[in-house]
Image (cartoon, rainbow, N blue to C red; front, side, top):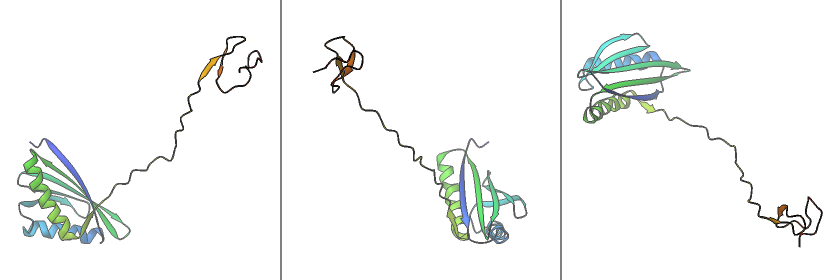
Length: 143
């Protein structure tokens, strides 16, 4: 039983029918070592195996290009690197590119208020800003 998984997403500059057929052909011909086809739903989904580890491949058609989503399962880091190597070879053979995820940055700016230093009014004792010329409470001169 596989304990871990990782996800990959590629973009291929060809229609989903061509992308699907090319991946199907590469896997079935054995050109990608140790990658075997298990089952598929035409132009939508493939279930492949790397040795006995499951690899799910989904296809989505987008205006003349294809998005390929891959989820691979593995038991340990060494196994993951071997599966990634096989999948990177597959991506290279079909002319795929990694999808870059852009995270929007907030344009909100937080402005901290400056610290106001206060001192007691000499007439009434109310705390007033140090730069104030008159006390807002009693009206007395602060200097």
